[in-house]
Length: 237
Image (cartoon, rainbow, N blue to C red; front, top):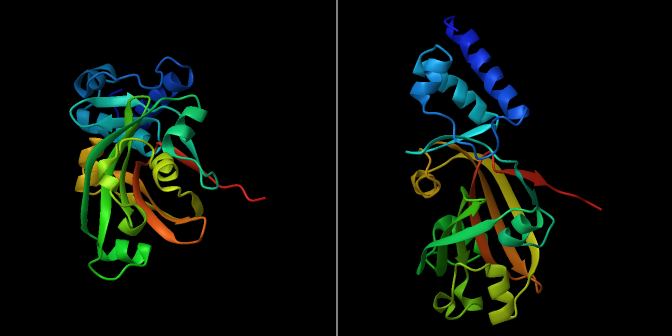
């Protein structure tokens, strides 16, 4: 396959895509090291890396720092109209969910969070940072920012559990209206480190501003997803 770089990149992409389509390379399968793959395709590591990056952009493979390249699993269907939490959504699609608590503290809210929650400048909020896996793969880093007025002594609870269930059980609060803001993004240092990818990697940023059944804004979530991990769905009746 010693040919011009563009043709070599195309050929590598086609070969790997064919292997994936026929099930020879299955979801979660770890690809050989780049050096070995470059030998297989008789090309340079630079050309090979360009092909892998193109496949990554299409959601067919993904990379984890210090671990290598893997075949991407199917995307999770993320229904914007569903009143469901991460674990329930993942399990309903026959997959395994896991949440890891990274930090939880009371702190001054950023200007953006004050805006989302309708709080005065420098108001304090409960900030909870977590990362989440689907079938063992890191896919989501999320920052939850809660108005403490609705959740006294929140930090004393197990915050690795679904917050939706904690709200209902401990505070009698259920979600009402939810507003979403969705935009592609380059993952910042904190989100990238949590997801074990390089800073600047492509991602999807979802801002959820949540109200209770009485219409009061109670919290907001800043979600940073791997770009190939979800497919957004919205159904209107």
